[in-house]
Image (cartoon, helix red, strand yellow):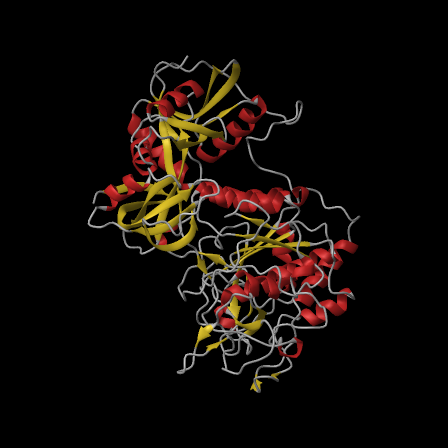
Amino acid sequence: MSNYKIKSGKGVLVLQKSSSLVGLKAKKKADISNSDFVRQELLPSLGGFKVVSLQRDGATVDEKLDEVRKAKEVALGTHVYFAEGSKKPLVPTGEIFIIFQPEVDESEQMLVLDEYKLALVERRSSDQVTAKVTKDSPNPIKVAQALQGISLVKFAEPDLDMLLEEYDLAVPNDTFMADEWHLKNDGYIPSGQYTTKKGADAKVVDAWSRLNSLGSGDVVLAVIDNGIDISHPDLKPKVYRPWDLWTQSDRLTDGDPGFTHGTPCASLAIAAANGQGMVGVAPNAKFMPVSGTSFSVAATEQMFDYCSKNGADVISCSWGTTDTLYSLNSLKEAAISKAAREGRKGKGCVICFAAGNEGVDYVNFYAAHPDVICVAACDSKDRYASYSNQGAEVSVCAPSNGDWPLLAARAWWDPGTTVRGDGAFLYWADGVNRVGPYKHFGGTSGATPIVAGICALMLSANPNLTAKEVKDILQKTADKIGEPSEYVNGHSRKYGYGRVNADKAVAEAIRRRDSTTGTTPKPPTAEVTTPVVSGQGLFRFSVERQPSQGFSVQTGVYAEYGNVLIAAEKLESMFAQPIIVNINELNGKTVYKVLVGAFEKSADATTLQKAMKAQGVDGFVKDLKGLA
């Protein structure tokens, strides 16, 4: 089968069609799971499609898919792809994200969409659109590949969905308050008769004492994950504005034994203090379950937008990927940034991500995002958990398994793990059955919601903290564990700034609350695209006419003249080159194109472009001929 080479994230994917799997989307009220042409259903939802193998009877997958698309119960059918070097199935959602060159106007953009029979879904900015294929279009992989070769297009990427790793270890889990050593470690686990290191915990019980409460009921903690049992007795009374990406409703997907991960994660953060079972770190917080993780851009935007717009203060994510083929593209990064900076009415949602469990020297790509808190894992003896990924982006570590596991809730449909020779399904790492819907749990998946719960306690103490301040406090108040030599400038690639200390973090949150008037100003933005208020700023400049010849580097198009001045000042100081402004009309409005440098040869402009790129300034070489 043919290979397709497409840009994805910050790299390139080489894709090949699966020879056996396809994605099918049923018509409304239809069920394709038991159709004659379905041999086996592998995944219930990937990019909005069920991933199945077909009864092919000697036909090729192309021939059979064409036939199945005509079935009365099938609304859409798509090929499934695999990237070179990966065994993860990929499904195109049908949407394509396109960034045009800055000088391409809207009419020219629409000509490109019409050429490939694409429908406009959303105009994201003057040069960015989301389009989708129609029945007259080639498949989205082919379209994106073709668009990447067009001079008017700067970037085109098909939206692809795949399964993300869930960062727990495949070990069953257990017990109640006395056994929740991560809250307060007395040096001994009663139910397991296991000796730990006294004090090797997150100091949560001490934080409760300092707060004189178990946290505020006004704080909303969202858990984005799969397999969330909202009927669990420790979670049911706390549920607030649930949402399911797969059903696109408040009806959460449950009952699939392949998806049980979200229940233990949620319980560690917010399990109710109701006199039975276990207790979470922030048991008074409201619980916003968002079910259905996805690699898709559209779904990523939806999950974080949903949390932000519906009042989430803290977002806990114990999933992601370290597969180097799937680094995050700018749209996914922007979706996370938007929630982290604009949520909570401008103070920012506090977002926690698991570092990952692959034991590699870099972290989950989602956790590497600068606006999130990246959580690694340590054990009940304050040692590094060997599975926990390492990296410069690790913010803090938190207790999890490594020697003795965490206690967490389990979903009613959780089948457990076979650990005995007789095939018994068990939930406990030591093989001892215990009463109730609980299990042993671990990994950075367990550490992350513990930190998310601590963030909820900090916001209980001081709701005016920004997301950046919460991260800063967590890092500054963490306890250094491990060898001192492992820390450089206070940071360790294994432990981050240390094992999180809830008591110190809450104390600092209270101190900052008491030292201010109770209102925290929104941090200033350095975005040059933000409109400038008339009369602000004082600039000195001289103006001369630039001949329409030679070459320059164009960096952006602005609608506000004040932004032109700010950009010009910044660019001139960074690159010591003349700044050229081209005044033009776009759709009846005056716009300003800002260019850097004036060269006789294009090679000199290219050299400047590379130097600008190295300093984080995007641009492209522009021929000045024809510009007036």
